Image 1 (cartoon, rainbow, N blue to C red):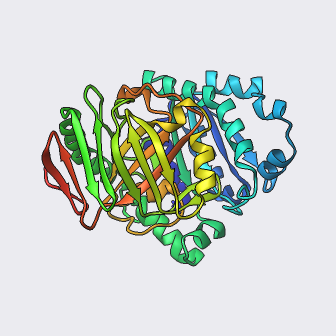
Image 2 (cartoon, rainbow, N blue to C red; image 1 turned 60 degrees about the vertical axis):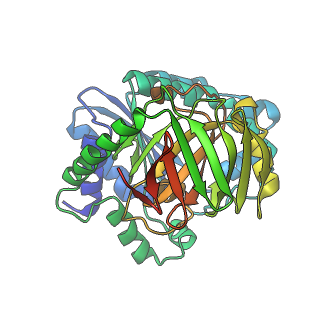
Length: 365
C-alpha cells in the first residue's frame, strides 16, 4: 500500500465512513490525481458510488472576473441536487496558486458567498441530522509549499506528519486523540462563560447551553480542535489576532476586533483592513461570531498560510466570524465563515466560569 492509498483509506473508512450504496462526491483539482484515484478506488471497494468533480486552473478567476450579478447569485439545480442527494463529500484541496482570487473585488466574493449560504446551511443541517458526512483535506502542491515557506519535499513530510500518516496505524492514533479530546469537550460543555485574556485581548463569551464538539479527523483532515458556537449576542470586549488571516486568497494581518452584545462594533487590521470590513459587512450575520475553538494538534507548530492546518496549531485559539454550526446549538447564519487565529503560547489565559483552565497554550484541566 503506497502513501496515497493509505491516505485514501483513512478518508473513506474513518473520516467519512463510506458504506455500500452511498453516493460519494469527490471534489478536487487535477494536481491531486494520485490521491483522487486512490479515494475513487477505495470508495468502489466499499460498494459505493463515486462521482469525481474536477476544477481547472484559472476557472474561478475567469468566473469572478466575468460573471454578471445575476450569474453570481445563480445556483445550478445540479449543484442543489448534490447537496440534497449526496451521502458523502470528500473535498481535496490541491491549488496551483493560492492567490488567484487576491485581485478580485471583495464585493464580488461577498455576493457569491451570500448566494451560496443556503447550500452551506443545508450541508451543516444534514450533517447535524446524520444524513450527510464530509471531509476537507489537502494534497501537497508547490503552491501550498511556497505559502508555508517550505520546499515541496519538506511540505509533503509536514502534511503527512500532521495527519499522522507516518504511523503504521493512523486511525488508532486519531481514535486515541478523539478519546482524550472528548473528555475535554464534555467538561467544556458544562461551562456557561468563557473569558479569553492576552495581548490587547479581554473577551467574554457565553457558551451556556451550547455543545462543544470534539474534532478528531471526521470533517477536517488533519484535525485537532475542540469548538462550539457562542451564544449569538454574548460577545463583549476585544481581541487581537497576531497570526495572518487568509480568506479566498486575501490576507489580513494584525486584526483587532471589539464586540458589544455579540456584534463587531470596531474592526481594524494592520494589513488588509478594507477586505476585512467588506467581509464583515457581507450580511447581517457576518458581524457576529459563529465559532470559538482551541487548537490541539501538536504536530502543527507554525503558520503555513493554510487555514486547514493553521486553525489546528497546538497552543492556539480561533474565532470565526459568520455562520455557526447547528450541531453545537448555534443559530447565526451568514455567507461568511472566516476562521481567525490567535497564538496563546505566551502571556495568554482562558477562564471558564471565572476559573483558570488554560494558560500559555496548555489546558490545566
